[in-house]
Length: 124
Image (tube, rainbow, N blue to C red; front, side, top):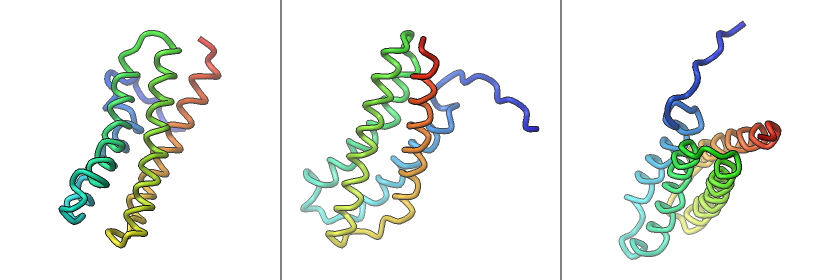
């Protein structure tokens, strides 16, 4: 039986926080290769949505009330869906084959969903 993990001291201790950060770095590498004509369009939107995921996790981690934590998780989930669309769009525009990024985003999505369900089940 695996040993229990110690409580997280910061959002970066959370697996979902680590995966979300890795996704931001992957999006940054992707957008660096997108044509300059998209700098203020797709590139900016993709980066903003990706950064919003761990940023909201970090802010939610520091919140004291369950309602505030749940709100930030919900915003992170919404940014995950927005990022999903941008990956699809980048693929369809021929800027990238985003399979690895999409898999990472799917993992982030599953972890966020699990955290949200646990938070709601705690009822606090």
